[in-house]
Structure formats: C-alpha cells, structure tokens
Image (cartoon, rainbow, N blue to C red; front, side, top):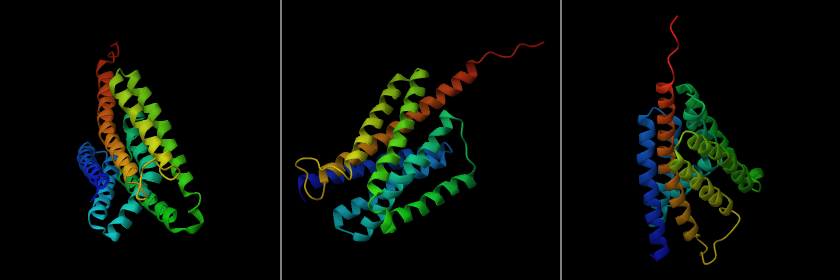
Length: 223
C-alpha cells in the first residue's frame, strides 16, 4: 500500500467519524433531513474505505450510488431543506421527510442506471452543487447579519472548497495524481469532513441567534 493510499484511507476514516458524529447530533436536534443525509455520507465513506482496503467490489457499488445520491440530491435538495429550519423556519413533517428521501432515491436510480443521462450527468452534478453553493452564500450572509462572523467565514470556506471539488470531480485531473485519483479523493474526503463539521456548528450558531432575537424582542404594551 503506497503513501497516497494510506492518506486516502485516513481521510476517509476522518469523513466517517465526522459525518457520523454530527449526523447523530442533527438527529438529536430533531432534524432528520440533515441527520440522515450526514449518515448516508458515513455509509458511503465506510463502503469506499472497505473497497480501498480490501478491494470489495460490492462496497464500491454501494459507495458509488450513495455518492451519486449525495452529490445530485442529498446535499443540494435534502440538506438545503434541512438547513432551512434556521433560515426560513421550515419544519417538514415525518411524512415529508420520507417523501424527500424516497424521491431522491428514485431520482438517483434514474441518474446512475439510465444510459441516456450518462453524458449530461457530470454537468448535472456541477449545476446541482452550484445551487447548494448559492444557498450557502445566503446562509453565510444570515450568519454575518446575526453577528456570527466566524461561522460566516467557515461557511464561506465550505462553499469555495466544496464547489471546487464539485467542478474538478469529472472534468480535471490534479497534476501528479495517478489513474486512481487518490490525491483528489483524499482532498474530497477532507473537504466533505469540513462541511459536515462546520455546517453543524454554523446551524447551531444561527439557531442560537434566532432564539436570542426572540428573547430580546420587546413585550407588547399592555392596555
């Protein structure tokens, strides 16, 4: 096992740990959209790690599907809907949560299995992630407006790094990277790890800011 493969396995392990911990934290907050999407990232990274260590092809197929799910619909649609709990006070019902995931799974099956979408698929991933990036810009602005400059900066870093990964993924090879793209996938795992951690704490920061605004609001005058 060469050095780059060791680094990739370490990066994937970091992604497994960070997405698992913060996915469970989101579930404890009652945000099932973000919680289960983060756990799907955990499941995907775990299977990719099994493939990298043992060459398990079935694990690769699982990871490939989960990766397509998250890049195409899990992050751009489900995670955005989950984050809207603190930007738009959006709280879907359990049934709506199920509809989100069922619809995303069905759409992912079409995305990876239908030959007609194979050629435009890489462009779809970039467009879908760009939608997420636009929302992240809004999220960062909301944090800055709430006095959370540190987390606004953190979300901005997530925006830039994840968008860069999304654009490089299918269109550009990092100089010196081998045919397995070990360097790229190492950077991708670390970037997604940052996203899993920062988006949780940025979510909590904006949630606290909203609660403080409500508590500091003046009481209506009694007549």
